[in-house]
Image (cartoon, rainbow, N blue to C red; front, side, top):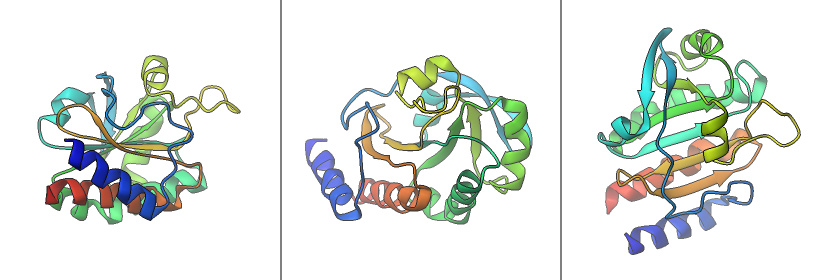
Length: 177
């Protein structure tokens, strides 16, 4: 695990990852949660610990559904979902939006390819992703969580442009271990 953490930290440095905004450090235990989510327009109950039984989870927080950056980020995750699956990872988008708003987002912007879920105050606090300048919204932070439930990689940057590339590199590095 220590070697994997060092490898992922080196990859983050090479890829320009910024962990400055996120409070959860590599190696920290990811808070488990259960919430409502949607995929391909259908709602369901999502529990992180159940998802981790399948392999690593890319848990990416985004500020608000249907805003330009968040829509572009969701489309990029959808376009790359086969690469994430090939690396054994599950992608889950999270925002403070109500699940009713995420139902349409899951179909239109995520193309039904991955789940998006509602991050209530407990989840937002647990992952320290509250957007300070806009209460009720999350910042843009991507976590890669190992099946052990530990944070393996963090990318926290309001510009969405590097989130998909850096999280994909992190899960691919995990698979090579």
